[in-house]
Image (cartoon, rainbow over all chains, first blue to last red; front, side, top):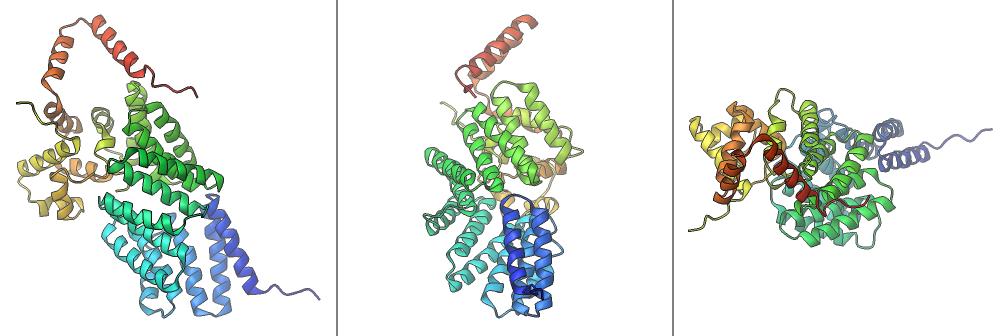
Length: 301
Length: 117
């Protein structure tokens, strides 16, 4: 007689496969695995498990741009649940959704809720994720020193850990240092983040770190290094269709060519940026050629 | 008395304020049209705020201004007397000489900056 597959075991296996897909940048595959896990959780009839499964899939859906489908259910979940884990997860996902909507004050609000719940759970990795999310919101709101402090707290919590999560946090620490005049410290943190991202083979973390490093090199007038890292960031972001990173990578590539004296190539980068993301604004390339955009733009805004 | 250098972010903010006033808009009105907080717009105008790329284009679209004109005016304020003198001299050169100057500038910028890949 064949052994029946334990639904709980299958659920956990699907979660593992989804997490692995996320780490490799295969977000669509991850969503499919989390969808199947969610269906299994519903069949099991455990409300909290079903809620957690929905939170897992909605985190990926939000990253893929399917924000509006998830938000109402996440909000309801946060209000009705008595399970701390579900509350933490739904608050965290709402924070991600608000970031996607560019509603940074609400992002901050939900990230702080997620942080409080993670403290109750005493789960270091989730505390760090929530602190990182608080930092993201603060940086988007132009509070770079505040963002730095939150990112630093997150990094200290994960001391000794080698992970994509920590690689991203290190890159974020570095970005804030660059924006608050601590250039050397910024470079050190971003390079540490990049090296960690490569060791753990996380294309998402690597693209973010390379984007920060490109920005850093442009800040100190080293355009060809900026070009190298900006190109790599673009290539990685294209692998998992991260439009935000692609947009900013194109911007920094244009800046690199401009700084390096290749005005025509810079113009072509900016024209591609304009055609792709700002249709109907054909004056954009000219504007970008005339101004040191790195000095006025917030890449996290 | 020497001019204090003006940070580019302050120039952009100042320009946004000028355009807003020239269009007879309050901060509340403009921020509402763009879809940002009034407090953020206030900080932008003071040069205390790094603008997102999206918001900068929204602002310019709101004023329906040529982006080149927007930054031409900023460039004038950020150019020093020495820069202007160089530009005047450059403009007096013939086309071939201007090309030589441009090539020399590109050469100097590239000098010692290209890493071995």
